[in-house]
Image (tube, rainbow, N blue to C red; front, side, top):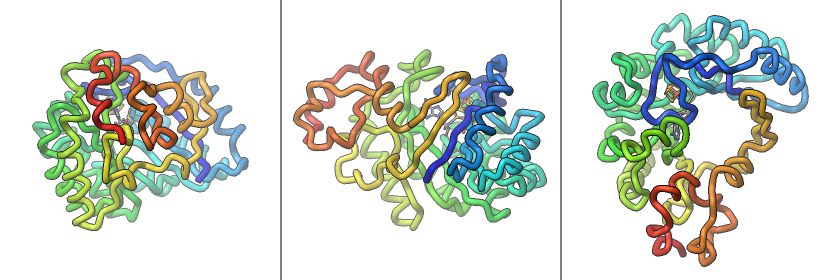
Length: 298
Ligand SMILES: C[S@@+](CC[C@H](N)C(=O)[O-])C[C@H]1O[C@@H](n2cnc3c(N)ncnc32)[C@H](O)[C@@H]1O
Ligand code: SF4
């Protein structure tokens, strides 16, 4: 699938303690709308089937519905929206977004309950709103994929998180390895677990999704860490994203993530998966080094 992907805003109604783009409530807007509109216009009718919207949190923008209308008028077939899900708790709002072309809602769900999720987002009520949002999107007939970022304090709750969201009827659960940039870099030791300490629990979450017939994918984990679960890694080759982030255009998001954000090391030389694995996030290596990888390869 060929899609374009746009970072619509830096602003957000949450302040997640590991936010990869460091969005938070007090952050000033750095997105140039003129550039954004130009990008959407230039790529219209060029074979891009879908527009993937992310941020920050697009639903906090007053003109978000106007932007969706513009995307519709430009003939893009559909929109996928990455969202913290809070605003979708208003059924009528969720319905308007659906009618304006949002056919896939990708909702973040990082905790098994309000205490765990709201601690991450730093916003009381964010869990209940996101849960209601997921249910509303499903009531509308939209597709819902959730994203759970594995961090130091939700490791033992992953199976419960899976059950909670499967009970809402979601179509797909994505499990993300934490990318230690943005706020996650600032809070590195508070949030970043070592892969070698979390994979058994991650696999239990995958197993639970399989047991309950729900599509599950793994994103951002080095291949040597997902032994036996390689088939569940997100297949970037199937998705071709051209991305606008502030004034940068990234022509191939998958290549960018592999070449610019990750590194291979000596441990990778022996590894059978090297060709299909981008390596390990640079910032992870900066703090934790290569020790746990030398025994994991093969
Ligand atoms: C930056 S958010 C923007 C969209 C929306 N505000 C949200 O939270 O879903 C885009 C995606 O990145 C994920 N994310 C945030 N911080 C992350 C991190 N440090 N590592 C990996 N994924 C992260 C979120 O869960 C979300 O799925
Ligand atoms: S991860 Fe999403 S919800 Fe959380 S602060 Fe960042 S942009 Fe906002």
